[in-house]
Length: 184
Image (tube, rainbow, N blue to C red; front, side):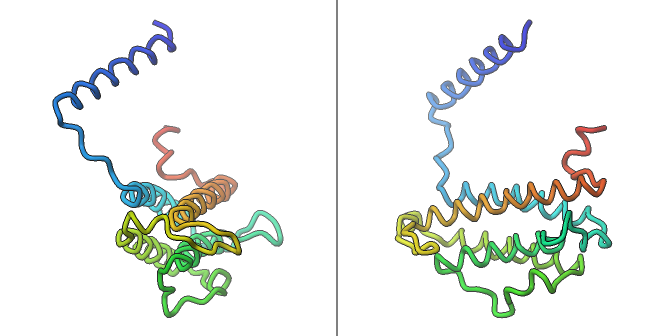
């Protein structure tokens, strides 16, 4: 049996099962945008934290070239970005947050603690957003936007720098923990 036929058959079986469940009235209710976003942030957070923990502390100052963020700076940028972007839609900045932390916080345990706190605060804030508020206007770097769009930028920003962190790890001989099983 060729792969195209297997794929087609799998799709047909999946659709049949989905329609069967739906016909019985057992389909779960549609999730909200914010709950979907929290789920994807859980996923990216898990990978970012795993990667931050897998990188040896002595590699936290490594950078691929002069003028480019170091490993610790990328992880701090992710956490700081979460706070900064959400502040545009009303999330308070932590009292102890300072923009220069991206360059001054370099100890592995401090970076990981900051990342974890940033994700916790991010998901807590998103969980409190009402669906009807997602369409509220926001000034986003001088452009008219809405809260939903800012949340999508938070999502994209996290994945952008996860990719950067994966490249940094691999350049240093570190295999991302979630992909180690695939290489065994």
